[in-house]
View 1: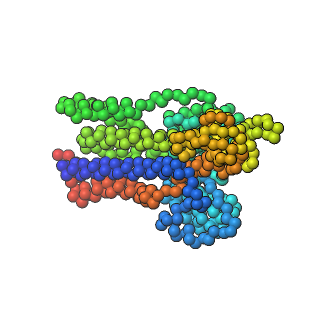
View 2: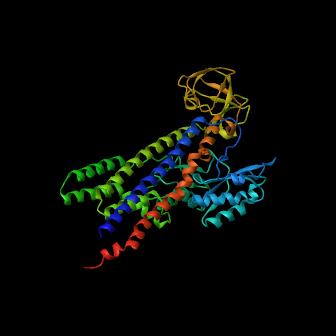
View 3: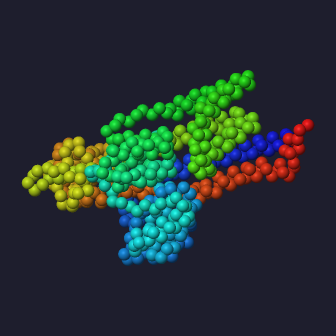
Length: 489
């Protein structure tokens, strides 16, 4: 019986090690993705004029070299919904790349983006959808739709307490199925839901119901509504849990010690345990919440109470700092999005000012930039003098003086007098739009180590769980200690 208990303790230690390593891998993957986004936001555009793919990745080498880019190649970016398996995504990419007419194919699992280059990718869309649904039955391939900014019929909502990218994809899919919705885009990194339709506000109750059913804490906030203060205080929970944990370690009385440790464990781990149960019900078993639940519950089962609470405490501390880093990254992304203009002040031939959507401005148009306004488009100053605050674009803290004949970059703030600009680049070609394009495509340019971690984690987590189970079962079957130890005396 002692050998059996020793085996169980070994198993629990193995599972705790697996959980810690798996959490490290998951955190590293998220932080790598966040860092990539930040770097791409700061660098904006490399200036080479080419599209970057995973050409150096050995997984793609077997098919990327088989196709030569045609003279009239077209690149299309599709969105994949309900794809929850990175290994399945790799299979989809391989089979799509083998289709006749496909010159290049890259599927980025993290962003659910499928980039297909060929003479006519849209003509292959039925076959692409068939391949994806054949590998993962619920997978849907969504063709891109034109982007709209500031047009009638579109509303932008903010989603608070959204903490799961996969859940965000489900929300987008279900909302897009509502009657009256023409287009729906949910950007997880910015927590923005863009809905286009006849009257999106009329569907707001249904949108909120969909979001809360998928992730109960999510709140959909309309632009004119005030954001609610968050009722969750993770730092306070961690501090109270840590205090209870330390008190449980110091108090010798076993009964009091056990009560304090149980209270600390429930306070620190209730969210992890509930999430693990919900994910198992949805078929998402091998995630960090599952491993943490198995490791800590196993520790309780073999009497390692201190270790169970300690592992959960350290996990929550790591998760807290990870969330802080992601929030900081999201704020920087939102700052970049705020640079995008919604409207411009067009100066007509008769001198009158007309406010038009920024995307309607053409090269050669004259636009007025008043003091305090942000320069909407790249252009050349034709009238007036002023100073431009370029810190949001270049990071330079000292304002730059501009006069007639000088260039002005979109995203800068006019601090002094009014100036008139002749537009040299339309919105789609302006500096602000290039920055935003870099942000949106940053996940497609992952470093090699990030791709290795992605492949490794698909194998590591289930392998460790399997090894732990085998370690628990095989020695007992061979020695027979558990059977003989459990026989009634």
